[in-house]
Image (cartoon, rainbow, N blue to C red; front, side):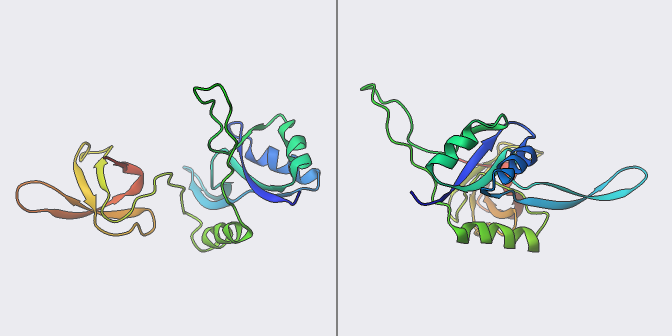
Length: 176
């Protein structure tokens, strides 16, 4: 069996520990980090933090997967379709297609934009959304532009006109 990239969900705040343990086993592992400047009352310091909270990536074969599963910081491999159906049969796990190119893209993006944040929402032009926080909470609109950075332009409905505003994607929820 050939090695394949897997996304691993870790115990809370254990990304670096699990990364080091997998690395010590001499397996291929990737922990995307962001370099941020944190300001305290008396100083500013550059720190590294995981770009994806509770996630790391490893390129493994089946036997290596079994080794990683035994590590204390490991929770599970991200997969889809592993639910038990009403017939009682368990469906096969489907792992996300993570390629070397995907890993390279993450590295390049974080190098160029170290402040980039992960947004679990995939929003596209034309999606109906609702603002979930702030003074515009519960306002609904439509995505007018593809997200750029971590912001999207939202056309808000009301009266017979609209206001075009830019809202951080983290504050939006897709609605039907």
